[in-house]
Length: 467
Image 1: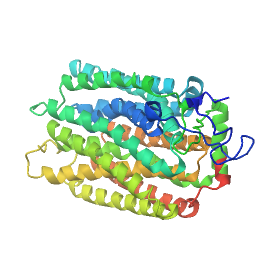
Image 2: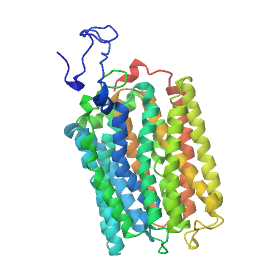
Image 3: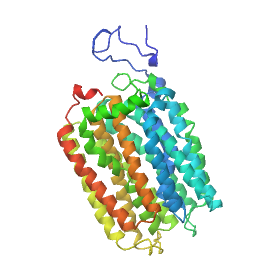
Image 4: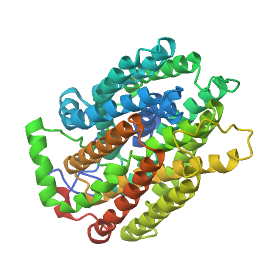
């Protein structure tokens, strides 16, 4: 009798490789052809997943990238971001259990709800300047829902590709997701091109609000993950998140069975840390609102090219051994850390919080050099995130184990972001935040090198497939 999942049948009761159902070999299933086969193709489903994040986290990124959420005073946004990442770090630990009980699609839908609330808070504070408490509270709520969204996203993105396609699928998702930042930045730039207020208009917030609400309905268009077959004919086995007690124990089991992951912790911690300096202390501090919009546009555009370049052209290059690709990726990202921060240092030493009132506009002679730094910051961010995901994927193909690694990644990422956003809200000197950013990113790559050298293999071994 045919299996109801995608109505895929084994050939003559066997896998196409000739192994009968009783064999221990993984069964290979035929995929649908025609429209149904195209719609249920893993690439199409990862693209739809990217569009969900295009509408919600993408619009959040576009707003954050303007510096201060597009406001003149960035303190409320910095404190809201600190609250956001603090709740994200805490609730991210439990979000896997919700995903297991509710299913990935419903969890994804619930995860989108915090984004329109957060964006609406900036519209409210633009009308009622004393409503900063609402901004901070909405940031805290967004941390809860974002934990749900990114847990579901991580489970689906890492479950759909075959082993040889992980870099490509991460690149596809990252490119579409960051198109949200590109489109949102373009809207903000066009809306505020003639503005002299140094803050975005209410129309910009309303436009972002409509797009994030649209994102809530997109998961309804996605195929049920339990009815997915990969391009190599293998079934998608979803991550089954256990109870929170079992999840807590799995953290220790993962550390005991694969302690090399600890060397990635500094890299995880730094993975959202650099946003604070890039968005608030550089883009928000130095530029007029229309220049901030243009900087934001090129930043997220660079992310698309950076993720596809390192994910597809380097990390999935089949002519090279996987260890070789891992070393090439490390050299590229490590080099970018020093290119970006050495360049940025010569700008940062020219201004402080007290003397950054003279804003650079798009027509100023100094703008082209400054905007190129934003482009390289975008390259660095996308390469960093893609390489981090790829390293985790290179350690195992077991979804339960990868879910624990992703939990480490998101928790430490949020802890780092919460701390640095609070430091910015407390008005620490720009140079202090910049130097800590440089130090953490460099240290993250240096700590990761022994893990790359000793742990990444050309092929995933069977002992790496269990938690």
